[in-house]
Image: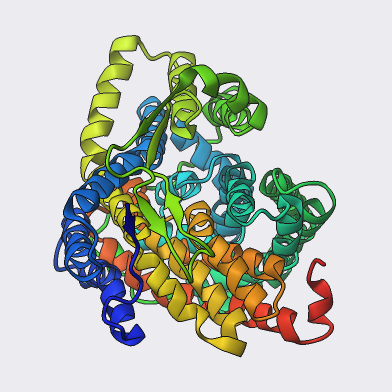
Length: 553
């Protein structure tokens, strides 16, 4: 048994700097564009192993086993989802139905700003609620690039839009994970998140259009933005507080899309914004031949054929995300592999845990209930519906694997870093640095959630990583553990746009490989600014009346 060490230098500042090295190296290399994303991830993984073994005294064998476990976990389930989403996308492109879908969505409005509201924010929120884990960015990024948006606009704006819905993604999986590690009722946690994120569900659509079109361009369509935000934020609050935290995104996104489309029947912008370029200088648009939007109006039958694959996806993923389905299939489709000499051989100790607590290291291969498996089944069904033969499906899948190879390597390396930092205690060292901020803890505790998602690429993983630390620290400081548990999740959603895994998904979906650093630089300051705003709200909830009245007791 090896006990985690959180302050190997007997100096919290030096220990925190050492623990942050893998993250700094990773983000620095990606942002610099000096190396490809998969090389940057591998270098950062090597640095993480060196830090864990030589500075934090983790046995080398354990460090390497943790790395392999994380790499496999990176592919299942995250890489598995990305691979099969891109597979479905390529099927629809080959058959021409994706172009029909783009023409249909573009036919709702030719104004690029409203297209962003409809696709990147509302439609993306639906896929976040149904499946999460990169699916919404992959789908919306592909649609936007097909509509003529530049690669940077399509990828960066999809990432910014995919924030406010994340805490309830994949049918409330982040809330469930937070509940498991804190022992707090998921309905209380979901309700508290529902008293934080609606403010940002209202803000993010304005922010999204401001980034794309500037202040003037945003003000020109403020009624449409307001309708989109309010029609998402209000259901988000009501469903999370009075129904359950599982269907929040699905319900809110459907209502938002319906309200926006209905509003466009009675209101039109005075000036139609047809340029798909970002208001700032966009290097991704230089020398690019943008697709010419089709002027042919598709027939009703063609529209339904274009929608059919995505209807199938929604139906399958809604089933795959339910508890009853997982309960029914997991007992006979799960292979649990406890990693030898790693599982329960590492102990969390004080002050992270009240008593020595073994860390599990089990690879749970739930091959059928993976969201990616549902996506693959939906893609195969859709392929047959569209007229593909089995041989052609296999050929397309082989080409998809080749296309996604570097992205999958990157994602696996990212999760390997996340798993290693968790098992070696590097993440806890970073968490303790945030926990030592005293009266400012509500602000910095929120940023801890942001850091967790930036590290792991998942709000669920961040909640599992830091949820108990949030509970313990808040109780020591006399704060509500419900508030700070929810703040971890709400702050985490703003880290979603800068985690390397999401950036790789965005670059893959938009066929803009090798430019992950450009995407990171584009979204980085937006991520920090929005995370700080969430932290400010949590500070008000913690100390200022009437905001403190919003805290679930």
